[in-house]
Image (cartoon, rainbow, N blue to C red; front, side, top):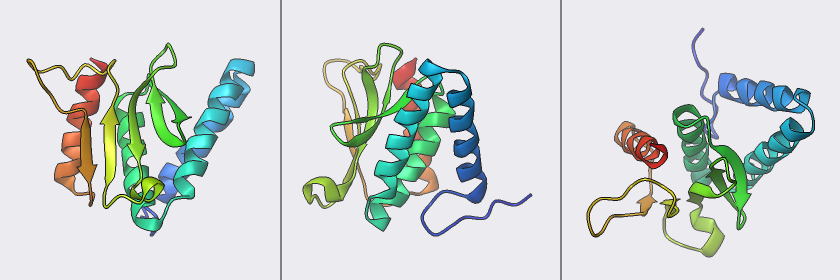
Length: 146
C-alpha cells in the first residue's frame, strides 16, 4: 500500500498509527493514559503551528519516535519535546513562529549524549526538510540516546 502524503506533512498511515498508539496507551490504564495525554498535547501543539513549521515538526516527530521509541513525547515550555525515563527532555523542536525567529530549531538538552571533545553543537537551525536533513537528525537522535 503506497503512502499518501497529505499537505501538512504526516501520511495517512502515520496519522492512523499515532491514533492507534494513543488508544494502546489509554488501554494500559492510568500510566498509559498519561502518556496518551502527553502525546496528544504534542500533536495538538504541532497542529497549531504555521504550515511550514508544522511540516518540519511532524517530520521531527516521526524521526524521533521511530529512532528512539523509549523517549516519551511531551510539551516543554510549549514546545514538542521527547523525554527520557526520568521525564527530562532530551530533544525538542522550537518552531520559528514561537518567538518570531527566521528558522525553526531542533535542540538537545544536557542529558543528550552528543559530547564531542571540549565543544559541540546542541541546537540546529532547520529551514527545509530534505533526505539529508532527515539522515542527520536520525544520527543525532541515535547518538543522543546512546
